[in-house]
Image (cartoon, one colour):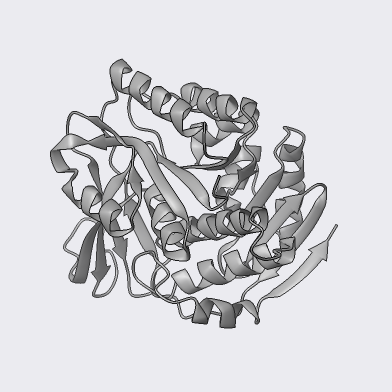
Length: 320
């Protein structure tokens, strides 16, 4: 079995319409856009694109509206991903992202398609089949209508029972429910972590204490992304912290997904016999990948040279 095989699950994909504002968002009146892009997205789809660029053998699944599937089909062909999405009636949602002059992003996220019981059964059969020859599953993003947080958690638990490593990146109720179903790695940002523990987190120490309360749920890896402050990773009671240099931010869209892809690739590489990836290298690589993602529009890794160069500048320290 190839160790570089991975499944990404996007239950609620979207076509992302990103507009770069001339100035700022004028609520209640007209805002002018200088340039825009429309491309297939959703957290798991973004992760798949980055992993494919890095060299992984990617299979994509989830639910896709049949009315506007063409851009997704083109992308999957382009990144050489195996398409195992379950088609459902209707159109995949369009999400609007407005980036102002200060690079702050305003997200307007629409609800997804309605998923029927038949589609759920088809997806479960797909998951069952993919579990035969894949060890890593990245489940990322929000839930469409028809998929409850409890059902999502059941799928994570089922993969866990089969000995699979589930990297779970979601938010709100889906994340809350999924925490109790033994995901192998979670990656909340500091805001999502605060929401999970139900209190404001003002410092790195606050974030560490909050994450430690989740460790008792049997989650092997808790990674907390803190934007420009870097990334913290809790594994077996020990913390590693990565701090990137200051970057010129163009857009933060997809930076979190790129981090997830980097962490996944690091572990896939660790499992393969090709080279040695100690934990520090996995973290510095994923952090470099994510830091570079904010300097570009759209996700992807056209060239590894800047990633490797930036990796040398990332400060990694252990804290307990």
